[in-house]
Image (tube, rainbow, N blue to C red; front, side):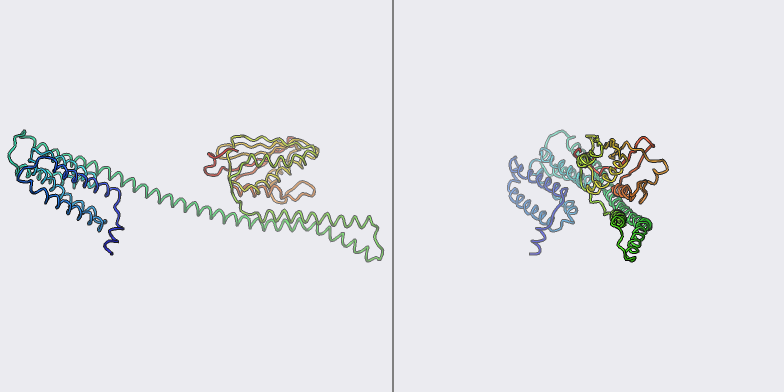
Length: 440
């Protein structure tokens, strides 16, 4: 059972299988032809034993290859000389130099040259030439041209040498190509590991930067919260004093104190919620999205409300923008924060222009307003947390937008001239392979 299982499981490579098949077909074809051509009378009785011996030889060859596939080259080399000997018998039985079976030698030599290379091919060609001479000597004298025999033997040797050298060259080129492929695969794997290491390092660096920013923001939050808390404390003390005096304060005065407390509490709530959005911003969940559709739908949503403030929104989307890999919800929040600043910069109305186009391997998005502009000394601070020039503003809207854009591998910057409006530009990279995908 173990022997049968080993024969069943053994497999040959494509080169070994092709070589073994062609060699077997060559000999089988020669044996069949031997029964179709005239054979010398004294050899006619040897055809049946020759046929049986050939079948036994091929069966043993097949079994050997299946049992020991790791030794297939050695088996093929030694059996090459047995095949040459069979061709010698075919030539001897059919007239020696007058026989056309010598052509089988050329075929076998060519196959050996292809599979084994120049050394085995040269050895096989010399052996074939010697056997051909022996077959001619054992056969009755014939009267072909005296130069036929040396010419044919020389051609065998030349064929074996030439094809063997070509095979060596082709095999060497194949080995070099395989070596280059292995080296390329190793370098690719090394680059992938380096890329993964870089990604991990960038992720850790981003995490460290966020922790540092959280510490910095905590100090700023404490500063921002101190003033509202002081105001709330003062108003509560005033209300407490009025109650302790035993006389109810006038309704208008009480409402004013409570209203002041409520305003400060709302400001505290806005500050803390904005802070939490910035501090807890999750890692983007990227998916293929159409920026054009995202911007169009967002602006359509805001047009109604902004129309009441006499603010118009104009959208200019380049139709050639490819799909991009982004977190739709986060990027939408960033756009809302930028547009919110643009709307607030025009309390008396005006035009906000939203444009997007593809530039190289990036998508450029611009939000332009007709507000009073941003002073030059404020441009470098506009994206810093808690920096604001608006009364009651938290200064976190553009900081959150910057964090979202940079988490997408993008960039955001602001350009402005006092009295000429402001432009906030966002640049986002195209994902790998996204340039060939569908258009926005």
